[in-house]
Amino acid sequence: MPGSRCNQGANTPGVDGVTAAWVEEEVGVPGFLEDLRAALKDGSFRPLPVRERLIPKPGGSGKLRKLGIPRIADRVVQAALKLVLEPIFEADFKPCSYGFRPRRRAQDAIAEIHFYGTRSYRWVLDADIEAAFDNCSHPAVMDRVRARVKDKRVLALVKAFLKAGVLTELGEYRDTLTGTPQGGILSPLIFNIAMTVLDEHLMAPWETGGAMSTDARRAARHRKGLPNWRFIRYADDFAVLIRGTGQDAVAVREQIAAVLAALGLRLSEAKTRVVHMSEGFSFLGFRIQWRRKRGASKWYVYTFIDDRPIRSVKAKIRTLTRRKSQLDLGYVLTRLNQVMHGWANYFRHAVAKNVFAMLDNFAWWRIIRMLMTRHRWRWSDVRRQFTTASGRWLPVTAGEITLRPVAAIPVTRYRYRGTKIPGPWAAEPA
Image 1: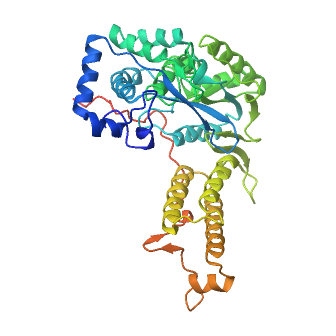
Image 2: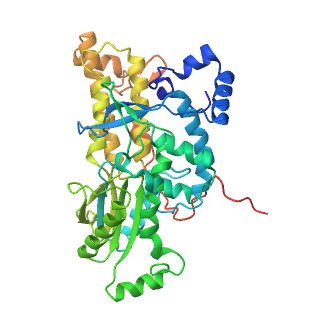
Image 3: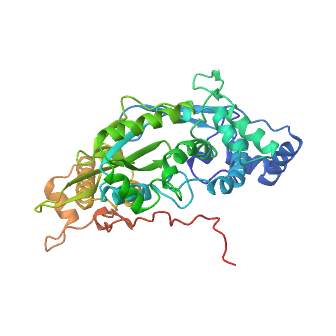
């Protein structure tokens, strides 16, 4: 259905209990959209509160995060609003921002950290904003939107979604005085619009004519003992790389805290730290560290897979391969291929070859132990089932479905694209 993507979320109802499937079968998409269009045109459309659900945070920490589920009609309107607003604000967004933007991805952010880390930007402000999506100031957001959008109907819709409210799991209504609930189609764009204040502040010296705009100016600052920095942000996760000292990183942190205060946000005292890259830091599931190459005297910036994503994918493998599980083997292998290959494709630009081989070994043993329990096999039965007459091991299969090894995925360096990432609305050559 238009405006609600074809995934599991499309069949998740909002507070009105309506799903995309119900609209298609009972109402019909053309009639539904015509009614919605009429309500928008005559001004009677009002978004309903989002349905709040608490879901586990990724990484197996055991913590929960809030997810707001809008009703189907609100999702359609949000998708339409995004189509209108995104090209307008993409023209202003800075290249340091990578999260929830077209044709940009987490690997671009990691590549930029690697690029500047190898060029002596070795002090890192590893920062975390406390409940960023929940606490963002509505007036600050609307001021940024009004600066670029003058249509009062569009402005009223954006504000209405911000103020729609939340229906908690206990059935209690709560006003949304701040923030934009995670889960809505429009929320990431709204948050990026708000965070452009920070992007512009930290990247102003890199603009044409700025104090860090050229290699020569940055070198001159370094000779005078002044710091240079580079800001990399992915939604509410960001890192600042500093060519200078630890004290320079602390000074930058104070600047950031002042800018965020105007947005109603603050840095988490527990999770924000200044660290030298030789100690390593975690960002977007990767662990980035400047270290000596094994067997050599030279030092390089390496990108490893962090421990939390490894624990997370292993937990998913365990869930699918419990020893007493009665799940169909074909289903188990299909899901394992989806989970492991999706995970591996995200991390295939890191130092990942040994991790991929470990995961293949881990998944294989989990399946073998599950089958040994299910069929009451001994090891001799396993060998008889999965080896040839010459003793060569065969892959685990179920009909035409085979457990595909992630170690076969090529591990390559991701090319840093810098400011050359094309947007989908690039001007056509004359």
